[in-house]
Length: 124
Image (cartoon, rainbow, N blue to C red; front, side, top):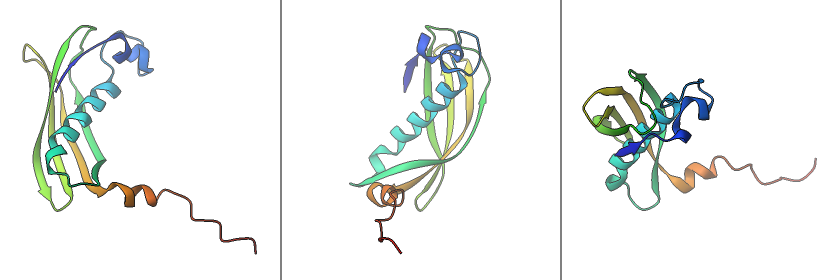
């Protein structure tokens, strides 16, 4: 996936620092987006994936206007679990970030159903 750093993507804008450079939380979001895109064709109707673990090194600064390419490759797969190697590079090839993102494939409705409060059983 390709992204261009905007003012809204900076550490100053996201509250993760005071400089006008790519914020680590935005880099992480882009890496997760790449893993979702990599899994998209494997998902059946009603399925989605959820992130469960992240390890990310932010190795270089990226100013506003910088173009980045973010890739995700499956490093490990076991049943519903997928572990991806992620890499973010400036378009000139300089590595900006790298790490691993683990996702688990889930049934979206069942997953969300677990978050809803149980119906009121009435007063005692």
